[in-house]
Image 1 (cartoon, one colour):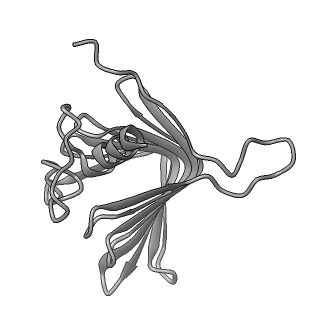
Image 2: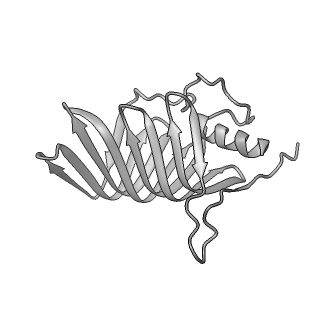
Length: 170
């Protein structure tokens, strides 16, 4: 249980490779520069001026500093000219050298409250350690992260969170 908590916290908090937990008030993205420029590339872009949104589609790659997000589509909605919500869907992959890799079917970043929600076969990997669940919720302000197992459906192993941890050989 302690190993699972340390892994989830290390992933969510972007902790150093030592796996030590950061203080509760430490930034969840570790040394990530959230003010760095954001580069977006995609096969297509469509703006909806009425909905105040823009949708990137086809091999979308969003890069900020050392963090990368890949998805089939990324929709950005704005309020008063500022990004309000970023919704990624289809084969969502978030890579960070400090945190590892998170994959899922969908991801939503709500800018105001600074929360991230990943859903659909969520997999967290850091080195050889792996955690799986149905939904990951991260509060970037508090550093709290919750990985849930989701509802159990017939013929599935749902309802459970799974983790595999490989001890250091040192």
